[in-house]
Length: 342
Ligand SMILES: NC(=O)c1ccc[n+]([C@@H]2O[C@H](COP(=O)([O-])OP(=O)(O)OC[C@H]3O[C@@H](n4cnc5c(N)ncnc54)[C@H](OP(=O)(O)O)[C@@H]3O)[C@@H](O)[C@H]2O)c1
Image: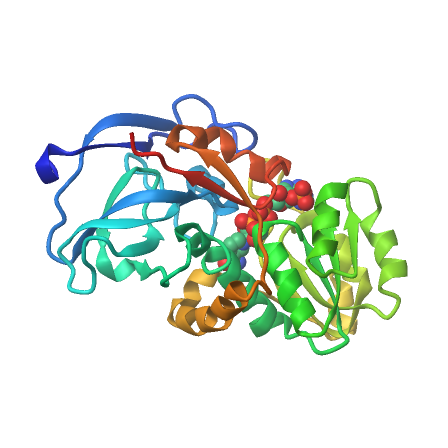
């Protein structure tokens, strides 16, 4: 179908599953198409000019076809991604041309999606914030910390991947709740940022033994573990949990690329005799609460209480290589692709 006024667009299609589940994507996994007709939106649909695209750790599991937050991205279709942009044409009663929206827009410059899948970006908020503090990062940190972690004044909270997009917001929400917060991150510069946003301490796990550091940083135990890493990192924290602690299973980035087989937890018995609750969650299951979460996060974003960093790469064609940054730790903040429309 030829699109509005014969408009053409560019996109990446998931052509085949990666042969190896780790490391850089091989040739042929993604197919770049640069002369694609933009379909006209049908009843209920909206055409969005995508300006920002989010790269998330789950992207790799959607490609690999391994278990993840959503079913695998279908082969032969535009690769899945969250994005934000401006409505250019609408056949949905809630949206009109010029509206600023976010949703699952895919690895493409122009997306036709059902209007019911979109969220409006609040007035005065930059589009990219809807993929960061007001989007996946903020919603995830808020749900994991408040629903499962439930820190009380004076609790000790440990956040892993603490300098990242989810982790850095979890740190700040825990500080705001009156907790003593210890971050874990992968470089001295990242640890400095984690302290700057309010953490009492930050352990550089590449230079220090995390379990030994917890012994002296958390002598009374950890009340809330907010874990983004999984595997050996989670196992190292479990002996330090306090009685009745909460372990928030937010992510397992050390495991997403797969290929390493199962990761046994040797220290699980601490959960038993210390009566600890360990619980996972997927933020997309809680979409009915996004307005409530936004109502809490938006004023904190506006008054500067919640800070964030973004790592921006330029142009859709930068996305395949940039994805690897999440796994080697070279991203310094929420990893975003700015889509140029030339
Ligand atoms: N439950 C949900 O609904 C949900 C939603 C969104 C995200 N998440 C999860 O939240 C976590 C963080 O995601 P994000 O988007 O905010 O990414 P991010 O933290 O901004 O970036 C990923 C960071 O993870 C760290 N990392 C990568 N491999 C590691 C390893 N093997 N060991 C230790 N640290 C490692 C790196 O930081 P260092 O340099 O510090 O190592 C890297 O910068 C992920 O696990 C993700 O799947 C969960």
